[in-house]
Image (cartoon, rainbow, N blue to C red; front, side):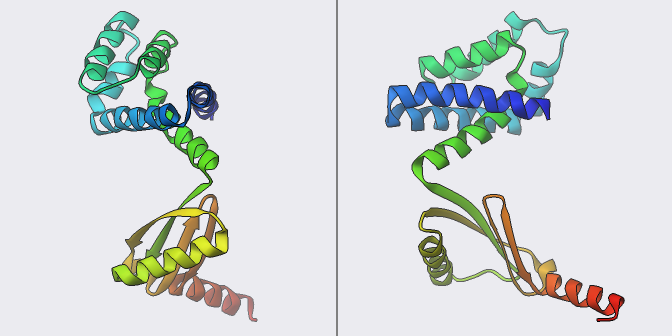
Length: 183
C-alpha cells in the first residue's frame, strides 16, 4: 500500500511538470515512462539490481543511465529517474507509469476497458460494440478485446473500476446460490 501512495505522488509530480510544459510534453513523458517501465518489467534482472541494497546509488544510476541512453529520453524524465535513484525508488517506476497513464487518461477524457467473451468477435462486431459503449459513456473509450472460454457465454465488461459480468458462468453461479437458499 505504501508503494502505491509513493508511486501516485511521483506520478502526480511528473504529470504536473508535463502539464506546465504543454500537451506534447505531457504525452511524451508518458511514452518515455511506458518504454522504461516495459524494459524493467521484461528484464527481471533490472528489478533485482534496483532492489539490492548492497548496490550503491551511483552504480544504480550508471545502470539507469545506460538504459536511458538507449532510447530518446527527455531531460525532465532523465532527471526524474535520477531523483528516483537518489530516493531509492527505482523499483516503483512501473507503478508510477501506471498511475501516470491514469492521470493522462483522465486529463484527456479517455476511459480504458476490456471486453471478455467466450469466443473471438469479428472486427466489425468489436467496432460496433465499442462505438455503442462510447455513446453510452459519453467519452472516448479504449477497449481491448480478449477471450476466456471459462465464461461459457455472454460477456464480462471491465471499464475503469467497474465490472459488468453478464457471462453464463456468473448467471449459473447466481442460479446455484438461489437453489442453495431454496428460492
